[in-house]
Amino acid sequence: MADFSTQEPQNAGVNPWLVAISVMLATFMEVLDTAIASVALPYIAGSLSASTDEATWVLTSYLVANAVILPASNWFSLKFGRKRFLITCVIIFTVSSFFCGAAPTLGFILLARIVQGAGGGALQPLSQAILLESFPPRMRGAAMAIFGFGVVIAPIIGPTLGGWLTDTYSWRYAFYINIPIGILAVLMISRFVHDPPYIKNAKPSKFDNIGFGLLAVWTGCLQVVLDKGQEDDWFGAIWLRWAVFFCVLALTWFVIRCWRNRSAIVSLRIFRDRNFAVGCLLIFFFGVSIYSTITLLPLYYQELLGYTAFAAGIIVGPRGFGAIVAMPIIGVLTNKVDARYLLTFGFIVFGLMSLAFGDVNLSISPWTLLWPIIITGFALSFVFVPITTQCYATLRNEEIGNASGIFNLLRNIGGSIGISAAQTMITRRAELHQNQIVGTIPQSGYWFQRRTDALDRYLGRHLGHAQGTPGAHAQIYQQVLQQSRLYAFVDVFRYIALMCFFCIALVWLFKKVQPGRRAPAGAH
Image (cartoon, rainbow, N blue to C red; front, side):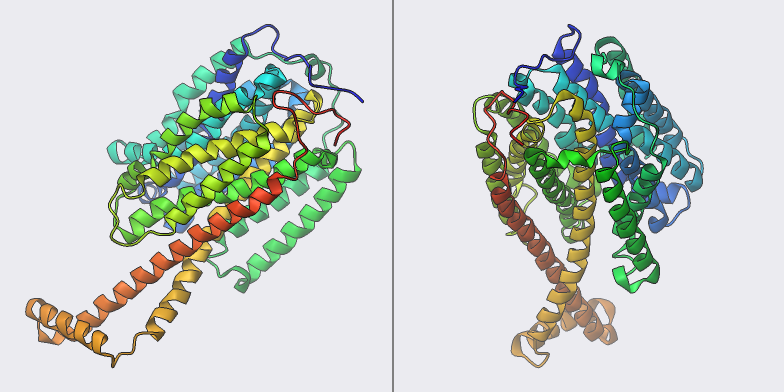
């Protein structure tokens, strides 16, 4: 039974922290761009004479191209060299960011976003694989804390930065901001990152055209269904049913092919490793919970309390401070404490804070949720870093590239499903609560009549007697809508809390790995 706990880092004598900063820049740029672009959508639609629905394809086109490249990144790195492929992807992403910002029409920016998504799809898995191989096992917790800075904090500060850029300058700067970061990343990767011997000597199999095509079909169909499902009444729309059918068919064929065919574009046999399989399941739920929370809180402040996008971003921004504080702490504890205890702590705290968000009302101040928001950011670091270290703990260096593509794809899919499910639940639960509220308020009741009469007299003095009663009913109905939507937000936050508590049970499916060491490869 081979023991990989003493594998040497593959960094060719370069300080691994310089490697970490180099690849973290690329990851940070890619994740930040996704968060910023979502805030700029209304501005893009107005500037390019497009509807809001048409503008959402700016996000969808990017996510589809991104998802297709993610799991295929390992084959490309073996074929062309990981360093060369990473630099090429950063250059593609940076150049296409310029064309996104300079786009004169909607069609032009959609084409640029597809190219940008293809370039950005490989950045996360390549960066993660390079980072894990550049540090010895005892330091990988600290390394993943650096990587987590890009993955966890970028989506947190993205809405705030995006709101400030679009309000102060233009939505085009939401893309131009990638240019200096991309240039710096290319220079640092060129100087400090080197391919390990197994990459240099790799002889990848022939490109799997069928597998890549199936990957494109099921990820594309899935993303379109998630983006347009609520808008077109899900299975009420015939075209959505066909999209789901082709998604399931292509996914099933893809899984069978990648499990049986050793030359497939992605090797799914790696799921035989228990820790990797559990880690992928947990990172999927992590994506659902974190992305839905990041989406819901700004919406709550904007839709129910009337805040601007920038003001809402400022209020939820302190989550980043909690993550920044936690990163060095988790980097140290990962090498000393069983990761399962750290994960349990993280999910418990995250769940409790989600319950705190479930106590919101329509009268809170901007700072009522300050501490829950900060503590949520703190808890996120105790989830992401231990999941990652446990997930890869029992894999050989040669397996990390393939595993990283699958791992990051599942996190992104979880995020897409989380955002779509949260938005759907808000709409459906609001309708349910509206019916419940209306059903419990008799129009002949004393309090309803008293409230109507008071509003009637007030509005009649300002709008005229004929408008008093209709105006009073409209005001009451508006309050019912607002209250029902509030209850919907409360429901979703509580469902997120339940998901976090459920994940605690999954955490203990991990095989124990000594902190700072790899488990034996045979202990899968």
